[in-house]
Length: 108
Image 1 (cartoon, rainbow, N blue to C red):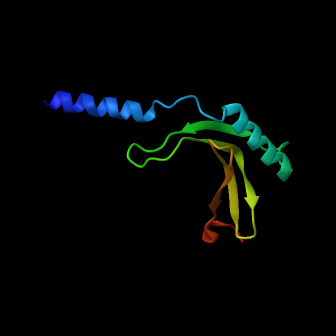
Image 2: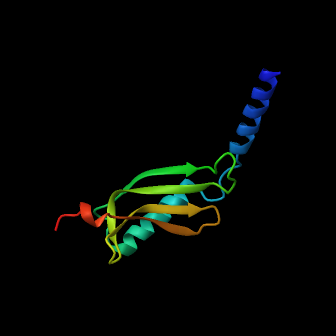
């Protein structure tokens, strides 16, 4: 019985991650990142370091998205933040990935 329950769990987990072909291709995600870098005027100094297709969590639901990370962070906003990449959803919308820097870690 234990083996049957384990097999059922494995099949369920595999079906959760067995997505169809993403609605947005990796090339489209890369193009969105390149456009964002060009619009910011940093495309000569910063490049795409990685593109990952992120899947929703096993129990959390949601849909897959592309996570595009830059080679170096881009300064963002007046609040000592850095843009480290973008998230491209399967509907084509783009969100910036921004991390806040701890002000105590910055040199004065």
